[in-house]
Image (cartoon, rainbow, N blue to C red; front, side, top):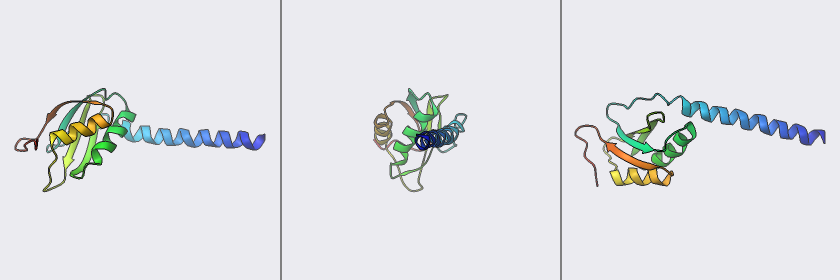
Length: 116
């Protein structure tokens, strides 16, 4: 019985450490500001660090996406596109929807057009 209790406690400790690491990674982006050349996506329902992890994973899966940052307190996601590539508003909206959120306005840097 002692070994089962030890394993249970160790599992809980490891899970707590992993949870804290993930939360810390996402929470650090709470105050992120958009880079000058980023596409800004308003996201309805983006309210916690775990939301950030899910939506960033979906957006990073788009081939043309170079980097993603989020500000969950503002409900915004910032997308940088790889040099020489483009991503359509439809692709961005689809990724946001697949992550379980509702996309709002998409603001592009001046001179960058939507590919819809």
